[in-house]
Structure formats: C-alpha cells, structure tokens
Image (cartoon, rainbow, N blue to C red; front, side, top):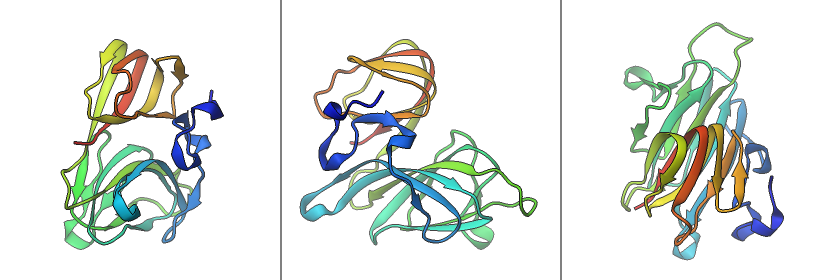
Length: 195
C-alpha cells in the first residue's frame, strides 16, 4: 500500500499504515508513540504534530515544547483519565478534550496487570496560533473535504483518494491544493483541520 514515490518531505510517507510510522517508547510510562503527521514553521518551530499513542502503564506523561497546547481523544482500550488530582477528565471515544498545557498526565484506573493498551490520538500545536480541530466522520460514498483538512486517519473501513487506496489503520496527509474528493467504503475517519 505504501509507495515510496509518494513520500512527503523528511522521509515520512504521505500515505501509509500506522506501522509505516516509526514507533518510539514513551519517555515517561510504558507504551509507544508514532508521529503520524506534523508541520513546522520558520526556524523549525512546531506548528502542529499528530501522534498515535499506545499507553500500557497505569500512568504516563507526555511532554511537548513550552507554548504548546494539546487536543486528545480516546480511540480504544481501557478508560484513560487526563490531568492530575481532582482536575482529571475521563476520555470518551470520539470526544475531543482540550488541554491548554504542554504536559499531558495520563492515568488508567482499573485492575493492576493484564490490561490491554489504551489507544489515543494527541494533537500538539503552537498555542499562539489558531487552534486546529479534530472531527470524526462516517464515509460511505463521496465526501467533499474542506480546504483546511490536512490529515485523514482511517479507523475503520477503507477510503480512496486520487489513486490511493487506504485500509483501516492508515493515514493520509494532504498538501494544500490536493483533490478535495474522498470516497469511503463504510469508513470511520478522523479529520484534522488546520486553519
């Protein structure tokens, strides 16, 4: 499915399965993170970065550069709480939680040991810029994408964009001026919109 000729800058695929994106161990906690897409501004300052996280430990901490805010959404697995102390917020499937901080504290209540991983999407972005947004859509047939859609994550089903066919658990990064048409076969997708 991944065609190296369709790779974007910095050697990352424009389209690929989750496994095409290198996994990195979480710095604090057990689990993995994969950077699915990102954009840097002048001087290589982070504008936004979309990560897929697999959290395996009861607690984990994700740190991003100062001046970063984050959006986080639970996708699957045991319940995850975001925040610390009494300010913890439970993640719900397909409900986006906004954290105006560069550090995400994650905890997974429940029995010790034997828990499957919790899968999350996090979007880190420069808090001095307009806030990106995450949306979910069910696509059967054609979908006209808004011009500000930069990333499509296929969670279930399959999509076709131009001559690319992407199954579940894959990612499509769109450059400005890309075709706005997407075709889905009973697809559940995540759309990242960047103003």
